[in-house]
Amino acid sequence: MAFDFPETDVPRNILPYDGEGIYYGQIFSAGQAAHYLRLFLAEIPWQHDEAMFFGKHIVTARQVAWFGDAHYDYTYSGRTRTARPWTPGLQAIKAEVERLGGAHYNSCLLNLYADGSQGMGWHHDDEKGLGVDSDIASVSFGAMRRFDFRHKHNKAKVSLHLPAGSLLIMRGRTQACWQHQVPKSRKIIEPRVNLTFRRMLVAETRIAREDEAGAIR
Image (tube, rainbow, N blue to C red; front, side, top):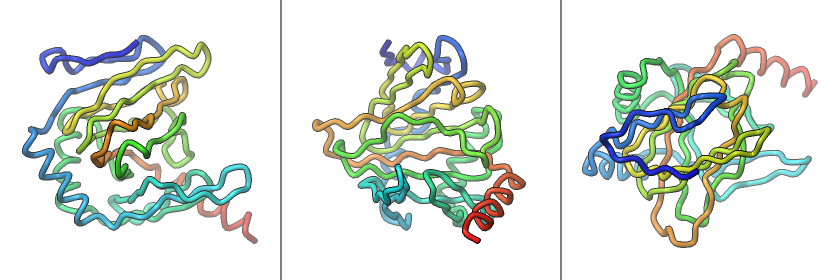
């Protein structure tokens, strides 16, 4: 199933069952979205993502950055990142997302896709530090990209296009029951910046650090 909703038909849950993928449409104007894209491209200290897959060290073409209320450690794919303090721009976007979605977030993972040759394969966000049935809010700036969901058991698929300034919130059983991806596309030549706001569990991040330290020792 593929969806592209008129702005009068949002917010709405695009997932048919086993979770909520609530699409809010474009919550920022075209001018605001262009401003934030320029701001993040210029001021964010982007770094290429690194991960361990089947014992191999991989450096991705996609670049990332990690921000939060405190120096949270976030571990995924065998790598640990420490959050930087919020920028004014990120704080402003977070406040609007929290107002619309009714949830509070204490951290944000940013992804920079230089063009359509960069994407992200099928995955789900279920790291220990996020807790169970985590609430993740995704805001997009720059090039419109397709976003796909795939059910883990029956392989049903749901897709939509995320334009600049749009908001999608994944909550409930979504991470437990669905995977998601940003597929590559040769037609796209412009950059996309994606912000994923999360709520880290401080106790869990501390346990994760202690577990890693024990493994190293």
